Image (tube, rainbow, N blue to C red):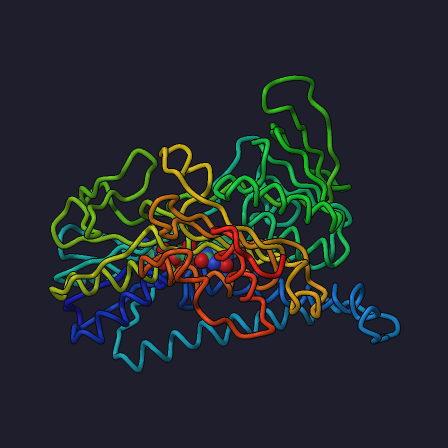
Length: 462
Ligand SMILES: Cc1cc2nc3c(=O)[nH]c(=O)nc-3n(C[C@H](O)[C@H](O)[C@H](O)COP(=O)(O)OP(=O)(O)OC[C@H]3O[C@@H](n4cnc5c(N)ncnc54)[C@H](O)[C@@H]3O)c2cc1C
């Protein structure tokens, strides 16, 4: 079988979800993947393995530092890192096999190997040429390199190597105070590493609301993480003893040296399109090397579309998935659409950080008058029962209409709690709408309701 209605290149959350949706809509679908397993970055080396290790290290940390407070003694605690890594592998395997099952269920042909475009409607995988009415590029992203810092995935690692270390480093230096660096840094910190984060800007996670980012930084410092903000790494020299980093103030000044056992390079990710034959096929890129698409995910070549990390927008699995669904529906003649105003974003440290919609800084920049409602987890009964009172819920609503514009949560299960506020933004709700919804007691979600009440100055429990 070499003729398809839809041929998707890449089986990450963008690609595999697109393939399934297109099959549901009655199209004959193939998906090319050059990795040995399906699921892309997300399932193999990203979201899923990182969450497996975050969960394991959270359990370890809780047993070490929190169980005693609950009256639970565990004797001498032992870390079996090999087992922890094996469990992570099992979790990844269950997920990638799950996609394989879904492909069979939906009669999607898995083309094993690297796919290259031969022009509109034509793709080669291995030695075989395929034709497809529609080609969807979902080739994802890769770790951004840094000049002077040569990755070997042993001493100097990207997130891939950072999730595979065979022993806990004494000193892990993370270059980049973004989501991936802080999540993986948290894993190793909880397992006993000293962790120093070097960040070019004078704040962590630049995409976050500044007040939330500052509070988040304070929580991480309390957990023992060290930060060198406003600093840049200019060189990394590997020796038998580890890595010597040369660090300079971002604004210029005297350099200093920092010794690390392992360095995690996590300055961001960039679109990945090597080997696709884009130039030969005439597919245009934008100014940042991403595939340029219009509002309907169409490239400049008819019949070639692109979605996920390889195009503009937040590099998030659920953003890629929603684009996958939307483009399949557009191809089927339906009105596929993604609302970029309501894409939640979560940092899976503990406490978690989650946000949706606008930050205070963005509203100020756009000259939009807003009201703020905040509620701390110290005043939430469930958070007290859990012993997880760090953080707060912050709600931003239009000053005139009360329409919900943004929501930011630092706290326990922030990633779960943000779903309600993403729904509210999607439905155009006001802060008062959220405040009038009955929230179960005692739950963390009551802090969301109280923050919504606080936007009108009438929180009850504070
Ligand atoms: C450590 C880490 C943790 C993360 N955690 C989260 C998280 O918690 N939540 C979240 O939302 N996002 C997270 N992300 C981001 C998330 O993984 C990406 O946003 C998501 O995977 C993008 O999906 P995609 O389908 O665009 O591409 P990818 O998942 O990158 O998949 C692209 C696939 O295309 C294949 N491919 C590329 N070129 C070709 C070719 N020519 N032929 C055949 N196959 C090809 C690749 O092998 C790859 O498997 C994380 C990322 C990392 C690195």
